View 1 (spheres, helix red, strand yellow):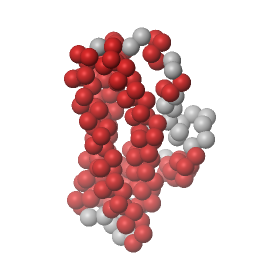
View 2: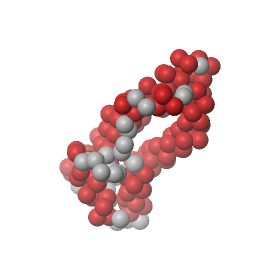
View 3: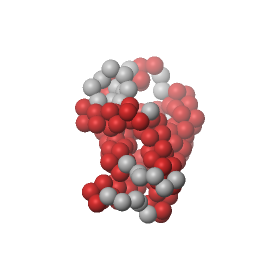
Length: 164
């Protein structure tokens, strides 16, 4: 996921510097940033959140901000995806406000991941025991890493690998 965000940030920097932005890469990236969390990552996290809250209801307040972010992320992504799909089709450079929104979206995604690592996972580790982490549904491996076939994300993986 970080590699995808890095690729988007490189495209933003290119556009700001007056070089052509690869709108197709941005579209592939936004689709990944929408689909991977919604299909794989968030459902498993939210299952853990629900389990932690059942075990210790006082933890709900600590988990609530991240759950709210999970709910808000798709709308932000869709606005950007619509804009960049149109750019990919029509060509041209995105307006400055669209680049600013894209930069903010990537920054928000990084902050979200940092919050999960620094604030949320310690809560889960404090509440959940070893058996809670073993159920099969927690297989949240990123399809862009490891030995799994990336499936629908193959074009994005190929594009990122070329640009590194």
